[in-house]
Structure formats: structure tokens, C-alpha cells
Length: 176
Image 1 (cartoon, rainbow, N blue to C red):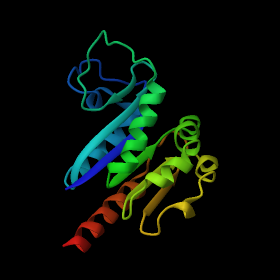
Image 2: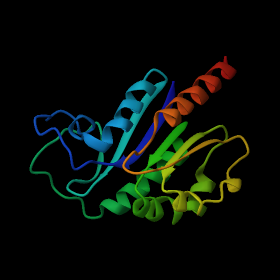
Image 3: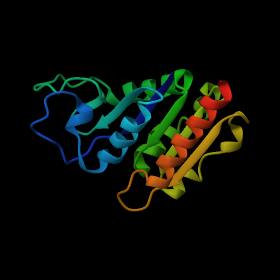
């Protein structure tokens, strides 16, 4: 089983009746990543790492509780989780708006490329200008990389989602 980490933002559209987990609380733009995560559960454990304006950095499996103590430094917590994900996850999906992608991925790219492990699968989704700021040639040659140039509000499209699943299946089959 693979370890799969999704890093994204929450959504302004929420399900106020959901008091279970944060991955069920956010709707709207978050739904495409939730759907992808549900599809990928067939291949392993999916970890949702969510950056929210209202809640700070949260894990998607955390219970929705109010009031919730605001963390001291949600940006630092998100960065730490992101770097840890690059060290430990088999599959990493990052879908962030341009400003957050610049802050968390582009600004830390030199650190990230040193944490990437051989045969990791990376899916990077953001604005074209942000993706162009990454030197993908610094990654190990065995790294499978999919990029999605975000257009409008779509964090990830169906073609990219299918591409991630296809690469995972291929990698699992090659290990058998």
C-alpha cells in the first residue's frame, strides 16, 4: 500500500452540518481533490493536508470542532508537513493557488528536491507562472511528475486525476 499526501487549501463553501472530519466539511473547489483522494484510497492511505483561512493548517481526518484553538504558526506547520510529505510519501499531490504555491513550493524548492525520494510520484497544480519557477530537472530521474496549469477555479482537472491514477497503477504493476 502506498502513502499518498494531498496538500491543498480549504474552501469558502462548506457543509455546516458536517461535524465529522474536515475533508467532509469543505466543499466547492475542494471537492475535486476530495474525489481524487477517495479514488486513490484503493492504492493506499490518503492524507489530506489543508490550509484554511479560518482554521489554519489542519489534517483532513481531524474532527470539526468549534471553538478550536488557533495554532501559533499555521504557515510553519503547513511547511513542515509539506517537507515531511516529500520525505515519506510515495505520492504527493499539491494543488495550491498561485500565492500559496509561491510561498510553500517555489520558496522551498531547493529543500524539496533534496527530500524527494526515488520513484516518487509528484502532481503539482498551480498557475503556469508558478510552475515555470520550478526547475524540475533537479528532481531524481526516476521521479514521475505531472503538472497541471490551473485555469480559473479548477484546482485539478479530470485528465490530470486520471494521469496520477495511471502512474500509480503502472508503478504497482512493476513492483509485482
